Amino acid sequence: MVSGKYSALSGAVAREQAMSNLAANLANVNTTGFKKDRISFSAMLKGAKQTSETQGINYARIRKIGADFSQGGMQTTGRNLDVAIDGPGFLKVMKNDEIFYTRAGRLMLDSNGMVKTEDGFTVLGAGDTPLQIDTSLGKDIVIAESGEIAVNGTLAGSQVQVFSIKDQDKLVKVGHSLYKLAEGDAQPLTDYRVIQGNLEASNVNMMEEMTSMIATQRAFEAHTKVIESYSQLSQKQDELGSIG
Image (cartoon, rainbow, N blue to C red):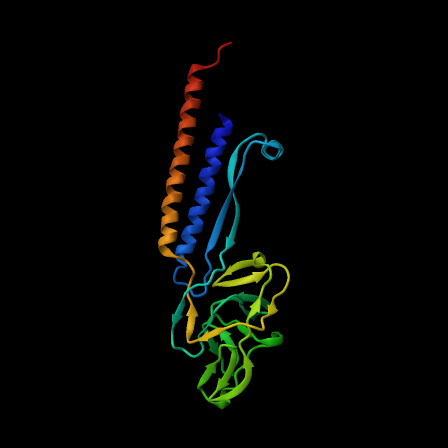
C-alpha cells in the first residue's frame, strides 16, 4: 500500500510541475524569440535499479525539462533594424563582459552606431567584435540575407553574424529570450539566412499548450483521488486495529 501511495503522490507532484511549465510557456506566447520548454517523464519500476535507488517504491518523476528550439513563425514589422534568423543559430550578445545568446532580433543603434538589443546588450559580429554601423553614410540601412549591411547603397563593412551551438542542451535560460552557455563555445556559421524587417515569434502553440494543460490537470486530479483513497484505507485499518 505504501508503494502505491508514493506512486500516486509522485505522479501528482510531477503533474503539478508540468502545469507550472505549461503556464510559463503560455505566458510567453507573444514574446519575441521565445522557445517553449518540453518536459519528459520517467518512472522507477520493478527491477534492480528500483531496489537500489528507491527502496522498492514505484514512482514517477520529471526526467528533464529542456527548451524546444524549433523555428517560430515570422512576423513582418517593416522596421529595418529588425532581423529574424531563418534556420538554426543564435545572435551573440554581451553585457558587462558576460556572453549570452538570443534569437530575438529587435535591434537598436546607440549614438555611436553600436548595434544593441532592445535591452541594451551589445551585439557581437565576426571575431566577437562589437557590431557597429557607420551612420555617417546615411540612414537607409539594408541588411542582406547573408547578414551583410549596406547604408544608402554603400557597404558598411559590417555584418550580422549568426553563431551555432553544437550541444544546445548546454544552453540555460536566463530570461528575456536570452541564454547562457554553461559549457563550451559557439562557432560562427558560414551559411545562414537573416530576414530584415521581420522578427521570429514565440514557438508556443496556444491551442497545443491549452490541450496539454487540460490533460495534465485531469491527470493531477486522478492522482489526488488515488491519494485520498489510500488515506481512507489507512483510516479504516487504524479503526480495525491488528489481530494479535
